[in-house]
Image 1 (cartoon, rainbow, N blue to C red):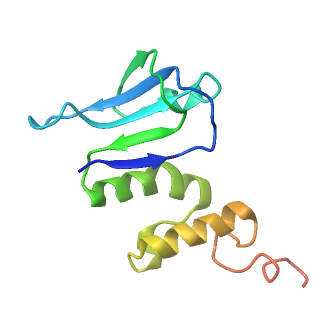
Image 2 (image 1 turned 180 degrees about the horizontal axis):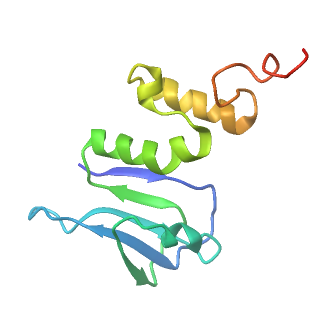
Image 3 (image 1 turned 120 degrees about the horizontal axis):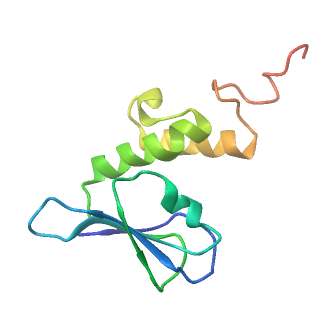
Amino acid sequence: MPVLRQISTCAEPSTLVVERRSRRKDRDFDYRVAVCVRHRWLAEEDWGKSLREGAGGRCGTVVDHRDYAQVVQSHSELWLRPLAMHGPEDHGGDVALALHAAAEVLAGTRTTWGLPSSTARCGS
């Protein structure tokens, strides 16, 4: 069963579809991401994909047919590690803890090395 995710808060209609074709005979694609003109840069990343114009739907919508473990690994490699330097492997394999830690880093309430930002300042 596919997983439906929303990777942006953008409410614009999508104009481009990024698709990773599947090698499995039971489905046409592994995932499909729809993006608008403003977020077209997401389609420029090399995700092993094909592009198609005229998507329709909402920007940032992802339909993902991959196994849960593959989705988590991909999300960690593409988003968590580059943006927040956290991944499930840093939290005993706990995906929820890794996502929470990454959200804290991005919100500025945690440093990338794990300390609360208020205790990580030099001289305090």
